[in-house]
Image (tube, rainbow, N blue to C red; front, side):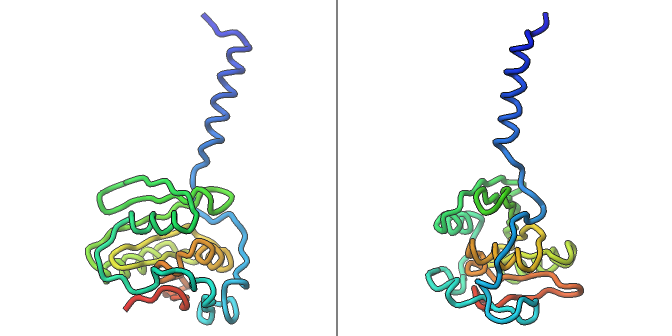
Length: 187
């Protein structure tokens, strides 16, 4: 027994509405940037510095010595007004989607490692593997890999979300990684 054309149309419209309601996160940043309003100095990997005003109201800038997990990041992002969705891939790997940070959801890969040194090393290696335009932050034993973007997009998103204030902002260059100072600093 076949469905009427009207029933098929209704079913198809419900499917399309559901598909549009859940936009998958992108592997690339899709929102333009305005980095000049967030940095002192030129927009260059080796010379940019996050303006003091970006992080002035963020109490989480003190170095973190406790062992943390993705909940610390999620609570921070929520306190900055961002809506998140968490998907656990493994006990040590979580995806945190920022649902209202851009044109499409922004997916953050959150690795929970045993030590701060391991987190910094994991992020460094991941950035070099993913190449130019890769970036992330690390705080204590957590490394966060973000979607690839231009330097302008990266600085803008890291500043708007205050990720640069939450963790050490690190970007991939051609052969090495660079830290953009001015936000969070690890010891």
